Length: 140
Image (cartoon, rainbow, N blue to C red; front, top):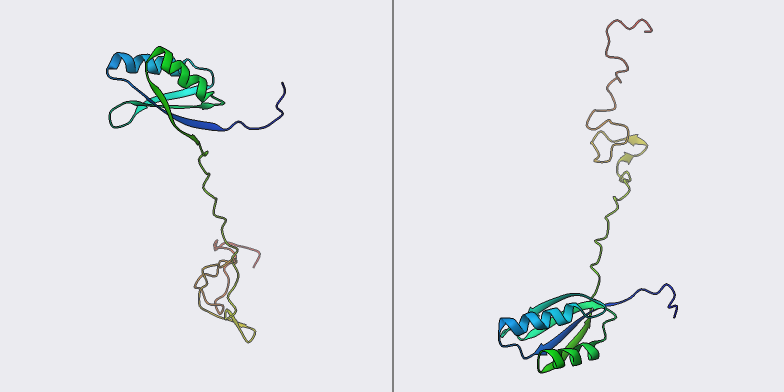
């Protein structure tokens, strides 16, 4: 049977099992982990009497019945869908615009602006630009 390109939902199944000692806990873990579709199992609960099974397309009723046959009393407590971790959104840098007061009446302001695309950055517009730092420049 072809199911297409659908994504499978991972689920967490919590089953309460009568486990009194480490031997029965190990037997329950071994039974749960060998089951089809199970990717992990963990003992939980205050009295260590619950087993949490994580997997994709796990038949929870069949798993509960198998635990009843091999270990002891088993009761299905809850089934939850596992949400994939959300990726943090990347912050895009905001475009840098010159403020409206940067140009006053057509004359540029001498105050530095954090977004200085031409590299003036605090240098007044009255200064002469430096084109070449070498004193032996023959062009000028």
